[in-house]
Image 1 (cartoon, helix red, strand yellow):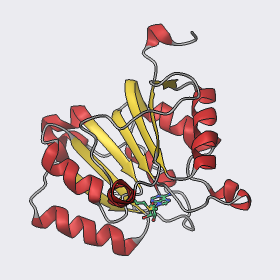
Image 2: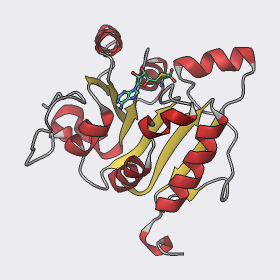
Image 3: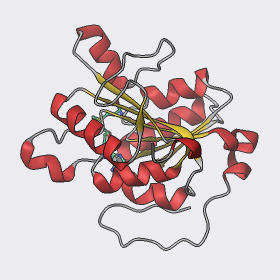
Length: 208
Ligand SMILES: C[S@@+](CC[C@H](N)C(=O)[O-])C[C@H]1O[C@@H](n2cnc3c(N)ncnc32)[C@H](O)[C@@H]1O
């Protein structure tokens, strides 16, 4: 298994982890969460989506350890929490086209103009997320920062994602949405959340 932080040299891998050995048949419905924080989404996913598997990547060791311990205590065999930088780990853990969904919720606090360069969903990451998804796979992006939301919708459409809500538009929470830890707070306070549900086009749709 590969653990690496942003200041470590990239580690070359010649093959991906055997997800079938880890998750059994659920490996065919593998999802990724980048930045799971206190784990509200991952832990609820483990309970509410028994027919799917989730790998959560969290860069803060304390958060990752605490959530991983809860996963263990609750016996959630369909969830695995790893500590590291999702930008470095994701391309080393998953083959292109192998993920059914990727979840990125309230990804980082870099909302100021001078922080734009540090955003998780930049051009490179948008291309990577698209590449990792299977055709028809879902990118579930949520943010509370309007400028980030506007920037993300433009960027993601530009790299080729198909926006479920229509070009440039945001969607309502689907009825079965699992709220993340941060989102639960906003559901109580009424603070606005911008949601994007972006699909990797199936082959016949490419280039439309
Ligand atoms: C604002 S919190 C939101 C946490 C959670 N998604 C939620 O909605 O409650 C952002 C989280 O993303 C993590 N994060 C930011 N960039 C990351 C990266 N490149 N790889 C892994 N985790 C990252 C941070 O450490 C933090 O825990």
